[in-house]
Length: 297
Ligand SMILES: [Fe+2]
Image (cartoon, rainbow, N blue to C red; front, top):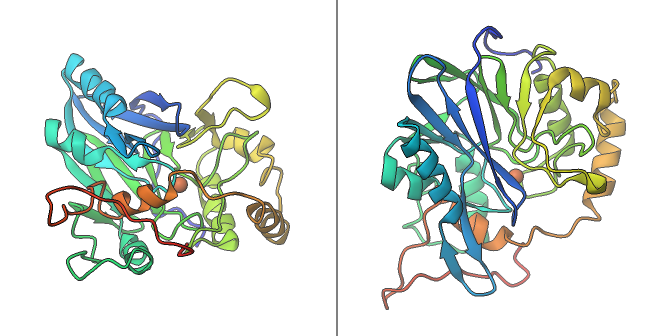
């Protein structure tokens, strides 16, 4: 389906503030309604020193400090998808500032897949109930008076959603900056052909639409960037720009994915993010443990 399930309005211009997490190359956003103090946080990060098994909250604390300084009211914490490269900071921020936690309804598929990989027991619910809201294609929600439209854009993962608010779209891991190309499509439930079709949907938004990336790796030594436009991606994206056809994209994407190593944090990230950013339940000794499935991924 390449049609956009809502009408866009580029005259509405939400205020977008970016927070870059250098260890994971993730960009988190605070999105503010231009006509009220309401805001949302998109794709926040919880810090982990995996080698040491240590979790901290410096990145999330910076976002909390920004929201408090500007006296904003946090209404939503959005995950564009279940991230494999960083741990979500959403429950930590929600615990301090409130707001509702939302993700795509196909989180249930992701939970089913990784519930098996990590041999989770029946106490791990696979119905998305760890979240406050599960979005479907064409859904919308409000940040104060700002309407956000949600579009299902799977391929990188089954639960990926693009969130469109006025002239700003948060694309998660569908596209990268034009010189970065596209996200990998080889995780369980990922599919390069599906990703191609999702990207076509994003590129069918108006050319002037601002696009905000979830990741940037500064290819060829350029400084980190996270904002582009639909028009720029159509004209210059190295994987899918200038009318790249589906079969060429799929061949390129699959060949490239075969060469990529697993993200360093995929094992802790999936265990935490499939639980909406919560750590696994404490063991009988009152301590928290993460599992490593041997040859399980
Ligand atoms: Fe991702």
